Length: 259
Image (spheres, rainbow, N blue to C red):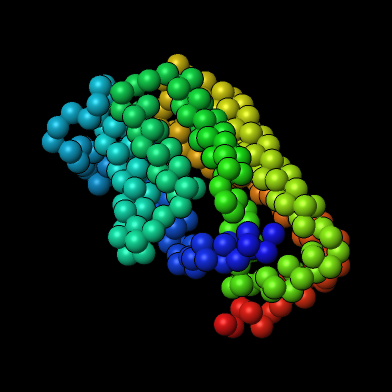
């Protein structure tokens, strides 16, 4: 176990913190505005709504197609700029941008609503599957994320596990927690699919339905998923304190945050 914890230390890299307000604005508020209000805005200002001088996909309503492309350009642009500045990304961010691009494909090529529902369900399922596959890594992803000396007293934890003879139980905890994360993502996939089927009532999704789906995901998909993750994290830390016999302040001493 000691070698695995120290390997996790070497694999750990600190993350850049983005601006959550800017991210929310560019990934949520502005896209919804273009999807729902673009045509009305163009009518008010006397603009025909056509930004791009060429036909977009096979969409018959080119104003709606322009609105869709404009709405998707903000999260895509934010992702690209963020990647250029910080020179790193994550699996979740990559999955998000793939989802945005697939939404554009569905809209521009007038694919059926069923494809959008499948896409919404496929992304969290694939993420969960990828997390499950990290069990084959050495050390697993969860170990890399948690067991590093940026915020954990790794050597005190390792000593406590050896003293209590709980090294194998500690490894099993990481396996069990990884499986719980996988099931949380599967639950999210099911919720995304059900919500999409309910909202996308037309054979081909309209921009308004796509926007409605975007903001309904927060109370019906994102919030339940977040509660699942909170439960899993609480379960993990409770088990960790039992295995080590240490308190949370001893495992994650506050002074490590200042190093």
